[in-house]
Length: 329
Image (cartoon, rainbow, N blue to C red):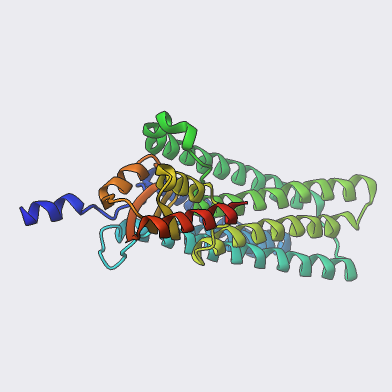
């Protein structure tokens, strides 16, 4: 009987959903980006084209960042059943996205430096060759963006259709590792679009300054995206979860009997849309832990729950409820 009770309370720790479709899409994008990088660098070296060489190395930074995203998916899947990761391997993906965001920010800073340098020391531009490179780069990045986007939609369809019946309590979630990869591709596409606009302006209207100016504008947007991604991933890595509606849901369910009061509550993310929580509560009633866990089954995002109960007499409970009501006001 003792073993049966233990098994009843045990559960798996595979909180994160399997993401093979996204991993496959990311792998394809890494290969396309890497091949394009090698082709541009080799052709630039043979033809003495600095524009082609520069774009090739720029593509290389994105190939490196996309590689980080891919490695994060592979490691998260590989160590998913490793018991040393007591709350799963999802944070590996977040760490990959955080690192990728740093690389994205560095690319933006390098672009600003290069653009300012070009303003101070303008160079002759081979417009036809540069435009060809920009259009090729744009086409490659559009294809990569479509691949990543389709992979993400496939993942959502596969793993979230069973939650449709709980739509009323579903909150917004996104794969930040996929987002970091997608931002690198979009950033590269943006630089190509801005470069095309600048090159056309310089070629047909003699706006030589437009090329470095567009570089600074694009770099500013890239740094802004990098900052937002760093903030999102940094908050998760530091367990900072401000204004999470799940906190209110937990409080509502636990305190729904009019007697129980939460004295301490900690929640943290263990997967893209899953949370673990520790709840300490005070009650004068003789509720069992199983009763409270049953209430929290309505909060579908909770994957791991630990509950601590402190019993008190009716008078103490009344005083606590009074203090609790005043605090809410």
